Image (cartoon, rainbow, N blue to C red; front, side, top):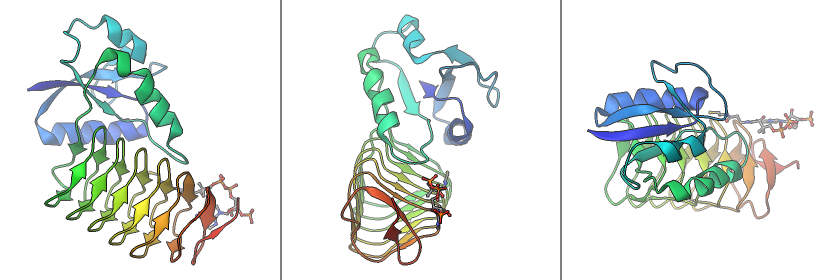
Length: 210
Ligand SMILES: CC(C)(COP(=O)(O)OP(=O)(O)OC[C@H]1O[C@@H](n2cnc3c(N)ncnc32)[C@H](O)[C@@H]1OP(=O)(O)O)[C@@H](O)C(=O)NCCC(=O)NCCS
């Protein structure tokens, strides 16, 4: 069994821990966070991320999962990942056994795919992508790095979601749309035209409000 460290100790981390358990592939060493949140689903606190440096293991032998949630833009998750680079952790794709990841899906370093999600043929998962519970990432979708697809969202075929963007819960993005980097799409929106500038978009059809 591979050893894995969970980076983050909030609600999103609990979901990730449950998925790791179901995968039956990893021995969870513990979680890191800036603060001690006590035992998390039976998983102990290891300390802050930098304290991993003193962990008794050869550099490069420990795997990690980035389990910090993202409401809004993904920049903070990227910064955290960047700060962890000296530790030479590896960040495998973590996909729930209750998700469906079809043929020819590529990428996915430090990405997570939650229960009930479907990632279809030809999709590309950028670094750190979160494909949340019951969401659908259709064929040939490109999720750039540090994107979060919220629970129940539907991203139709051939869509591109730009770096750091978040697609809220229950959003529908119709086929072929291009979403610029650093866009937040509020829960329940319907995106029927390209989102060409960073900002906050809500409604059906989605329109920019900030
Ligand atoms: C869009 C969102 C991020 C809020 O952003 P915010 O910058 O805090 O915006 P505010 O709450 O100040 O709202 C700004 C305006 O947008 C409206 N608004 C916010 N979210 C909206 C939504 N999803 N749909 C329609 N209107 C929305 C607010 O009513 C407010 O309108 P007003 O200015 O007329 O009063 C949040 O509402 C949202 O949808 N989050 C996604 C939640 C989600 O998917 N969670 C998954 C977690 S796993």
